[in-house]
Image (cartoon, rainbow, N blue to C red):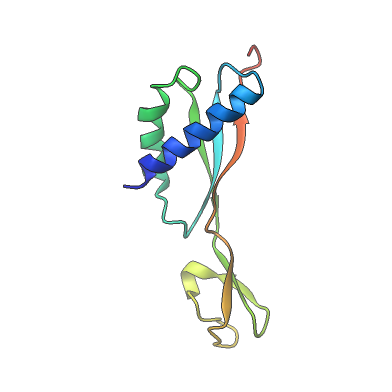
Length: 117
């Protein structure tokens, strides 16, 4: 389960950002998680709950997941299509000359702090 390692990196980045901005409490963190990123959102949120509650800055904070659908583009016919459904083969022309456009993200979208912070 690599989700725990990812959570430690998220916490590190949130703590750094909070320190740079004089923030003492975080109420939520929103993550963009791509459909083909290999991250299991349920595992990530479970690991978050365990790890975040050990940090005073993050105790009780929520991890919200913004799922990003995987989309691939065919370099030959320029069709964009659902990666999970069709894989590397373009459903329009049959080419395998394709590139993943989005859906592999694992990134912090936003950090929310309480109003009285």
